[in-house]
Amino acid sequence: MSMKISVPRVWREIKAHYLLEATVCNKCGKIHYPPRPICDNCGNRNLFRRKLSGEGEVLTYTIQYIVLEGYREYAPIVFAIVKLKEGVKILAQLTDVEPENVKIGMRVKAVLRKICEDENIGLIKYGIKFKPV
Amino acid sequence: MVKVYIVGVGLTKIGRFFDKGLRELFAEAAFKALDEIGNETVQALVIGNMTSSSLGEQDNLGALLADYAGLGKIPAFKVEAACGSGGVAVYTGYSLVASGMFDIVMVGGVEKETEYPTRIVSKALAQAADAEYELFHGISFTGLNALVMRMYMNEYNVSRDEMSIWPVLMHKNAVKNPYAQFRFEITKEQVAKSMMVADPIRLLDSSPIGDGAAALILASDKVAKKLTDTPIEVAGLGMATDHIYVAYRENILSFKATILAAKKAYETAKVCPKNIDVAEVHDAFTVLGFMNLEDLGFSERGKTPKLMDEGRFWPGDKPTVNPSGGLKARGHPVGATGVYQVAEVVMQLRGDFPGVNVGGDIGLAQSIGGLGTTVTVIILKR
Ligand SMILES: [Zn+2]
Image 1 (cartoon, each protein chain N blue to C red):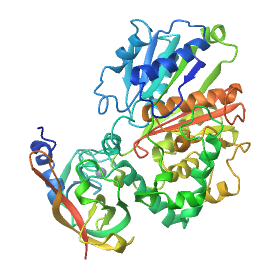
Image 2 (image 1 turned 180 degrees about the vertical axis):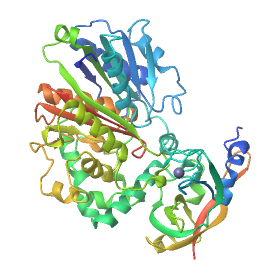
Image 3 (image 1 turned 135 degrees about the horizontal axis):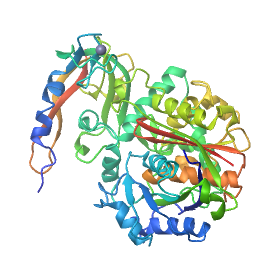
Image 4 (image 1 turned 90 degrees about the horizontal axis):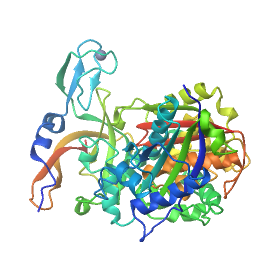
């Protein structure tokens, strides 16, 4: 038996995954998600962390029927690129919605949900999903 | 810089081969390429491959393949850039010759995918994306491409059936290609009824899983003419990368990496898009085929499906696109694909491609790793 989910690997990105923390350039104001250590707009390395609103709208989506190893019990899964109020775009699953009711432009907000479970040990990986408002 | 020519090519058929692994596939392609240059000694080997590690439990691929194919104790190594590994291997092999370091270099591409269940292969291929922020959520590579396809159809108001001209033409072109995985025609109706993989991508929008290997011999201008009567010049090449997290990009309907790599390739070859006679582009999914033609400067944004339906890019048009059948129908042995494309364009320009052969003086090959993340564009001249 081997563990497929590594605890420290999830833990070190936890603020970005659970709280939607981005890094913001203190020079030009560009918001970076996933967080990065240098602004790709102006080259400034002086960035601070800010929690994103989690509110936005669906820019595009897919209903994925053929899912990856470890996700079979959740199929089909709806994935979307969500554009937040702040202008930042985020890839995540949609939840609490029937796939046939998903529309481009639909307003959604972030919620913390289970992503998947380690098949062998039972560890649970959590992350942000978006649900309709 | 030293001028670089391609003086030999070798391909295997693409498909499911129970009796061939990474080493057998590579040796078959390598021997064909070596035969074209009278078995002259190659001085270094560069291999394009994505999944030998994740699927085949094989690292150290360069040494393994150089040894198995009897190339001797030469410098040999693998380069990896997901599905774009083949193009990057050619880029690397070119650099070794152009720098003056070697006169004869073999560039190989090999992939072995068919002996594992689809969900295992899909997981390996999904590693092309950002592991911590894309794969984390469970999205497959097809899923990522589906996000782009829906956006393309929505933005440019293109219907399901209008998109289907891509796989229909690719299958038509592949019928005559003896190396192709799929040598049968399909209809738009069949595309529309095929299994939904990740809405709106259906099975017949997707390149298949397949095994295959390709090999090229690159040579400096000093020795090229001694090795063949028909050297094909690597006239220009470019490579670029982009944000791996696709949602970070400002525009999702265009690959900046293709635009930058193409600009560099066109500049170094001193040609423009309208000079290209034949092109092999990276159509891992229907939508990518259209976007690539737009990013390479062959077509207008959002109009490509309609233009193709009217006969643009078919054999005999300039450029003819994917006379091999493309990734869709020739097949997509991931890290070998970029090497296949260059070999095919070489044969087009030499006039000895055994499938749809349109000839021409200038050809182009575009290879993509990930969803537009790593792109190489290579221009060849007769
Ligand atoms: Zn900045």
